[in-house]
Image (cartoon, rainbow, N blue to C red; front, side):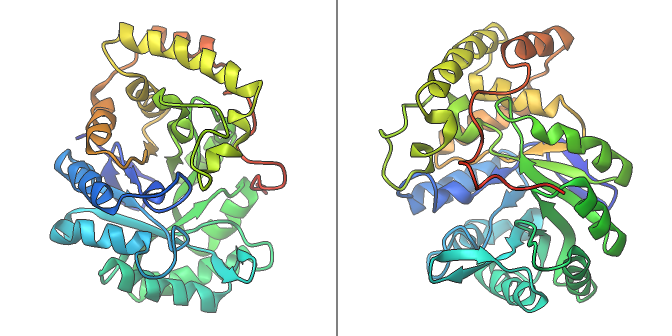
Length: 325
């Protein structure tokens, strides 16, 4: 597996990472045994970057606990990333990046993952009620205490990134980025200037770019794709047609559609690492092989001809789209 260095703070990880959210939330009922098998298969294939969060199913049987159990035999050989920035409320959960909550989450995550350090600690979402300088300062204290290795942000805009970076250098920004969703590209000049790496979550368009899709309403009631705008009538058909054309391009390269989509991301810059998620060890093997697929200028032009600015439909429902400042 190829390695990439995210940012200028020495964070080196595999070119393809693993996003664990879907093991316990957002995509219908999970399968713990299959999830652990997929995680361990990722490690066997050279994947060293595993992404989780407290939010991904709080309490007993949490996502962090599952990831911790899966990597227990090789924990020191991998990079574990988790997140803070939410707290449970009567209505579900809400923003909370107060220093006391950041410290609470750090201790809970260390315990759930069964580790003595969090290699990357992201602010999950920017909290408008807490100055980003205060957030960065709290994470800096955790880094100085040896509990955290690197500071990360998620879904943050240029001004926020700069303000945080001035207090505690930011190693990596995580934001949705795929052939379907390209808004993150406007953040790249800031990241390049400051020496910050980029982690692409939902790099397969929440599964649409796997080719295994069906219309909204045909998934389990707990599956977020029932409400994703890209699965709604009109947008769904346009995206389906684009996927069919992309699959043809992949076949011409002797690759699969997911491999083409991941290789496209890797070709966007050496500072980028995608973290596809899967509950299947077989799918994990397919995703990992994308690191060996090389796309030349003609290939990239052909892909851009199909989706020059992204897919059809917003990436979140109205009112839920993260605001970048």
